[in-house]
Image (tube, rainbow, N blue to C red):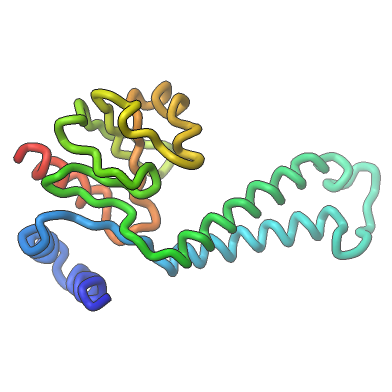
Length: 193
């Protein structure tokens, strides 16, 4: 706990020196979840769920007309309830469980959202980047993807991800305490060693 606080405070003061210090002292980069951001996303998700339930009339009947939003978009309301409800639950689950999200080191890359295994550098054939809307991704192409299967939703979406990005794994650093640039520098440094 003390190490995380130390890194957070120093990162604000001088980003480059902290980065160098962190790599030299610990020989890896670790990305941790930011609880505040997850909390905000949880609240936004709950707000969307409650507003969708309100429009649906769960909290009491609404004054509606045949041309109102309620009659035209009833399926969309229920899709929103399910989507934002599941998203809020996922954010709460991640907020309550503190763990390393991403570790890049001499042994390889471990992304907790994909798998609990560390993928060694010898199994990573290519590292590329891509961008979807405002979010950037680090795409990993593996020599033998079957050796490192993904779990959860990311495991199910692996074929779609492969078709869209060309890589088996697309690492996202959103909601972590490290930047995209930090991870790219660490990958360049440790992949070459």
